[in-house]
Image (cartoon, rainbow, N blue to C red; front, side, top):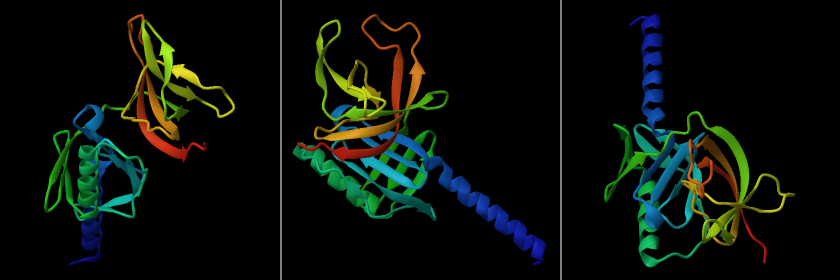
Length: 211
């Protein structure tokens, strides 16, 4: 086998390896509401939740398997069923499961369980913003009394009511966050709804609120 042939085969192998890793990059989700499972992998960092605490740490794909490093976690107590889902997710991620993308779905297969997630909404075309978010909502008044997220763009600014949601983000009382979000315009929003749609891109940092 010639040297040129070896170089060509090496290049094909490298491209194939990159192609096998590319589908996982992004955000994925399964279920809805309080028990929704989310997973994202960007720039070598994984963030995941089974509806309770957020798990985060380094991760990569090796030979079709998801290999995660030591995962840190927030420390919130949740209902027993959510804690059980979280324990199962931790075990799955720690087992170096097989992973592949199939027609808009991400399949993570371990020896004892398989998790199938759908691709989260696309972030293409959105405006990137960095905001601070309080972990606890506060009473506010829209068309009727409700609870609003508290947000600001600078720590020196006062907290302001945000009447919408941040898709893919579930705040936890006792923590404050800095988020990278994507902002999209909403055409003809209802009178009592925001004119912008916010979607979580990345949790940049979280900190415990001092009493």
